[in-house]
Image (tube, rainbow, N blue to C red; front, side, top):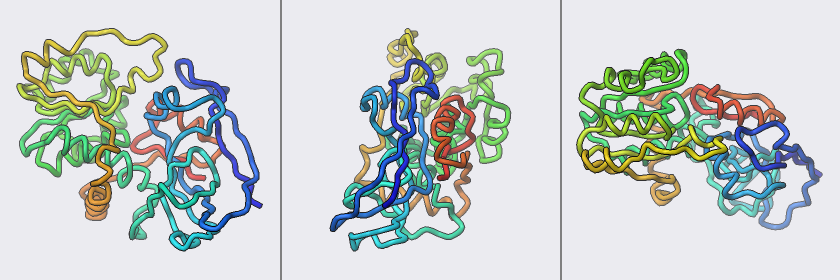
Length: 328
């Protein structure tokens, strides 16, 4: 019999998450029935969305939400022979049993490409960058694109895709190391938002003529300032609002109506699952660009399932460069 470990949400987060909000549990899994598959998690993802969605979608005592790259270790389902790899949305678990539904088989995977990228650049974060940029921002060659949280799992892909699309790209990040990384992967301009004297002046210096597109991962004060530097008919993709995820008191204005009205801006929030019908096509493109070296990938890997909460909290603090994953 297999004993599976899982992390559960012991207590809903109040402000920033704490170790005491999580509990590690262990259960014995039952024998497989016909059609069942036993999976062992290899890599698990920690992502910003888990913070607000845990409040909206989870009860205390539920297994923490999240995706993993998992390997079949026992199977009574011919679609998933032993050794097969999938991406599953089964939460923070070391092992789990599935009936084979709602799994994504990993396609042909080049040996030189880490399978963990199926949780990052060639997975949900990469798809988020892809669809947010091409479907919401509708970038055109020659556009100037602003990206916040630019050294993260989504932002770093956004910048590189925009360069593939012939755009000028400006990124902001929270450390000098991250700024150097952005320059390394092709951003035209980058700055540390924590150390500049004025966000407004830093944005103007990076692009005196303003911005055609804004890929917003942070919300809050930064976005209020950025909105006033958009060009006429600028497009804004609202992907996240991490600056406010841990607030105990909701943020108040400034408000968006005046800059949106006078510059005739378009702002749209989105969730990547909207384009599930285009998922496979987009993943093939992302994989191709990674193999060709047009998209460079950085991962922040934490070793050990027991460190899931620490990896999650570290990601929320911005300790990761690129995609944050846990190797079991």
